[in-house]
Image (cartoon, rainbow, N blue to C red; front, side, top):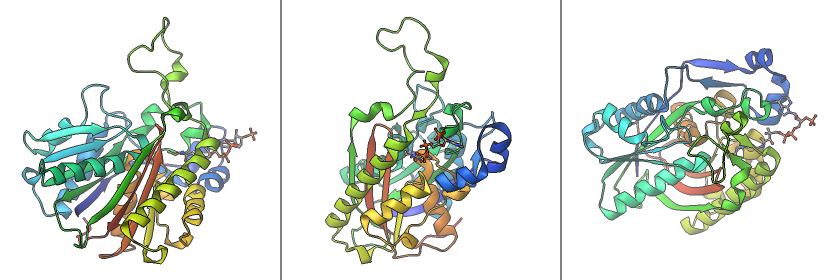
Amino acid sequence: MVAGIGSCLPSRCVTNAELERTMDTSDAWIRARTGIAQRYVADDGTRTSDLAVGAAERALKSARLTPDAIDAVIVATTTPDRPCPATAPTVAARLGAGPITAFDVAAVCSGFLYGLATASGLIASGAAERVLVIGAETFSRILNPEDRSTSVIFGDGAGAVVLRAGEADETGALGPLRLGSDGTGVDLITVPAGGPPRPGETAPADSADRYFTMEGKRVFWLAVQRMGECAASVLDRAGWQLEDVDWLVSHQANHRITARLADEIGIPRQRSVGNIAEVGNTAAASIPLALDHAHAQGTIRPGDRILLTAFGGGLTWGAAALTWPAIDPV
Ligand code: COA
């Protein structure tokens, strides 16, 4: 069950007006097509692990736990500090959590739900009792400043939850969770180069290949379809009717995607809660950031039934049922 939550944003806020000055775009286009008004961008000295540690410290505080009470740290990220090793051991060490299990999960914007599933498995197997699941990104580092279709959408940030062993009927219980992938869509959301040389590669990769690319239109409809199907399957497994769902918290990809998704599932749009206007699309950090903000604002309350769903590169997707716990905002 969820025992604590926290988030962390870099200090620099970049408004649409600021982007208007540096690229061929407009505040009106960005708001109308994505719902985004601003996003946060890490400065050169800030790494993904810095944001992850900030979010994790707040999550521990809200769970009223010290770092030594944690058995494992999972960091879901698309933008690790380094290609090798994983970022999670750095985070665990900086938290002072001791020589515990620590590893990353790579599922792009679905990463947080993949992390939650992995943490649940660690707990169910007895390998851990309390796990920090962190979604953290410095996505701005992989954006192509020449590509206005991606540069206006993504932002940096981190969100974290403490997951602990508990009973299925406890407030805060994580219910059924489903994940999926379709690797035939690998090229739709990708950073084509930047790791080891690709097979047959003789010359250095074209520099544009080192940036994130996305086929926005195709991704839009696949996101609605896959999140819709997965969410319906989780509802079914949880035995929840549509009217039982207090809040839909979906990956903050684009306000038009979240609205269409609510229609697709059959949940009134006003029961879809999010913060894309304030933070943009923060990839793996998106769901815990949205949950933390909604919790801090008092929108989601103890006992509320929440349907989570995400979609991202891979392609990957997932959905989960969660009953909101009684925890302190930090
Ligand atoms: N500012 C102004 N114009 C822009 C722009 C920007 N930032 N980005 C693209 N445009 C232009 C395009 O060049 C195009 O111009 P043209 O008609 O002259 O060729 C026009 O806007 C429409 O582009 P299109 O790509 O068809 O727009 P769209 O309505 O599909 O919106 C996205 C683009 C990226 C916002 C949208 O496809 C989207 O959100 N997709 C889902 C992406 C997502 O959320 N991914 C995350 C899932 S993990």
